[in-house]
Image (cartoon, rainbow, N blue to C red):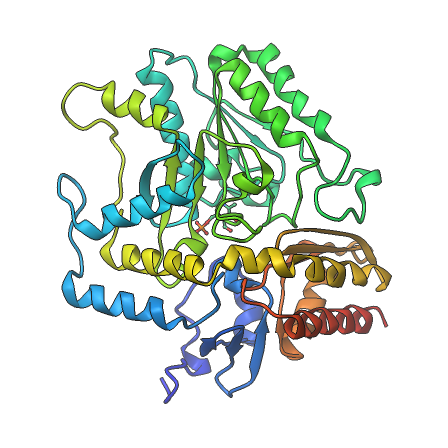
Length: 443
Ligand code: PLP
């Protein structure tokens, strides 16, 4: 280690990096040493504007003093205590604070440590719910093509990304996928929610006809699919999914790991999109990513069926050593307090029109074949280079980083999701640098 606690290049071997091209990275390391506000800093002090809030998670910006102090204070009071058959006050308080933000009637909160654990927890709760109500034949889980619900076996199986599934053989049985809503010609370059594609929700009726509603436990979708390149639901699509789930007694799960905590201008996406699911999963922005934490909020009736319906004893055989970890709970409360005090969802809404126009100004850049946006999210889709999917966007990513801006790429889509504290000059710099990188790559 040197004075900045940055490993020397010859120490890069041991760490097997997640979702990374390890060989390329270790030959060309891009290190981050420090973060503050809207920016990261490299070990040699270069500032990098964060266009992605880390991994869609540092919504309140980096290095927030209030969160740091809450973690420090909590560490001094209680470092850890189990939450199996034992409690500590701050976990209960964090759950109550989350319940204040979730849609009305979703007041029960289960803690996890990540989005992946939240996805698997939600699926298990859905199965346990039906069993508790005497409908144990409801075991089928329905996801959506291009959905991402993390890397646990449940989320990976219900998720719809081929690349994440093919390496791992047989996944969960009894899983189906709705079609994704992407690529409809008439929706290209739509601002906000696109007009066309609500009919794709009807495929759920086909699955019901095929398998019988009595076999289907849950439908899980991201309100806006982020990791596969910002796929915004067509107008009426989520509403129709809700109607069909209600009609057939199927639980609707929204994976709000990205859309939660102000990202689209309301505490949860369900509120802005006007559709209330039965279960919401969350993580990332919950603690501003300062400490890992996820959670699952459920409709009170779901909790009542499982908990009140069970005889005395453990009602749900599920939980993690670190569920409701005191340091994470402290970080979550401090984060939610910052969101409230600074009205971060309101800030996101206020700058959204400027953000939207700026993102769509890239329409005239070379190779841009679609642009999508909602809240403080944007996806800029590039035409793949002949026979080399993903390389054009990766090239753009590297150019942006070298020019002091962090963007995220997934396939040939550049995804943007800045901290909600972003201001107009940041937007100009982010989009200007991206534009220059797209043009330089094309030249
Ligand atoms: N669900 C969604 C919608 C996500 O975007 C992600 C991560 O990007 C996850 C789940 C998985 O979260 P984690 O990486 O914390 O396990």
